[in-house]
Image (tube, rainbow over all chains, first blue to last red):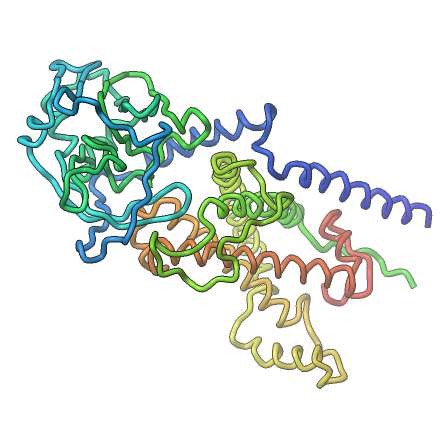
Length: 237
Length: 222
């Protein structure tokens, strides 16, 4: 009898002890004890996403322009839509571990090979929207600057506050990854990153740097605005 | 009269059961935090799939992660142990032959009808049964399949381009999100029913899932 009571008491205690931290844990990002471990797992997931699940041969489904969504929200970090005071002076710098660093004007980019498609945009928040994009395939720029063998990543930097994104070379070379200067048959609007933004249907929206000013090839994994705050670095879908 | 204890649950079953409890709790609560970032189902501008939870913000105690990134990191970490124990458990059932007592098959249909009749009071006598009655088999078989559905819909919204065929199978990205979300309520309903039945019908089975030993009213069910 005493034994049974003890067991019951022990069980109650055990259940209580197990649930209390669970309840206390809600709203919790893991704290100093667990958050680093969760970020370590996130790095493993990045690796699985990049090395196992991602295929450069797999193309995202394309849609007809008639299927475009009525709206595509746009986000930026600055308090107001980031805009250039002197758009004619804008250049894209391509540097870092490359044999031929480049400084490209919008005209020059528009004279390079052109790609266009209508694809579904996936936001990390869970919404999606279909839009058309046109621009130069990123692979065409990469071929022109000739990255050195040590280059494994690209750091894309914007003029929107300190927004930037680090990318793996494989995703950058995907045939649907482009530097977009147009959206829905029009020049890229300021809200969506004018004059030039990174676009690809194989990454989540937060990886698609708007308001580009430079892309730097590196051998060390560059962080990024949201990535440094805990969002998955790879962000591939 | 004291029943002599019988060995009921192998340690693999007990371990996978409790790991599932903890990981599922974490996955559901982090999932509710993720849901908050876009609390509806449909592309931007609509149309939206019918749901009573449009724009619902779930109570703070039910959300894990603090914000979207924190919740995503919990969710994408806990998916691994859940899938692992799901496969280990399945492997154990197959190897031990215990799947025979759990898998609901077409021949269980008449028994399930009788059992439903008993529960509805249309039948006085409890129909004879083995370890589990046909309705239990139906519950345990379908919850496993819903678990598989949760994993597959989860994959299809985690990598909707790499698993594009799977996403298309579920009706597209937003529909896959929709089904992924509904599996949550199936798990919640199953868990509530499961726990209520354990404590009202066969409390001794609670000890069995912890220690492995059953000492109670239904030893014949073994």
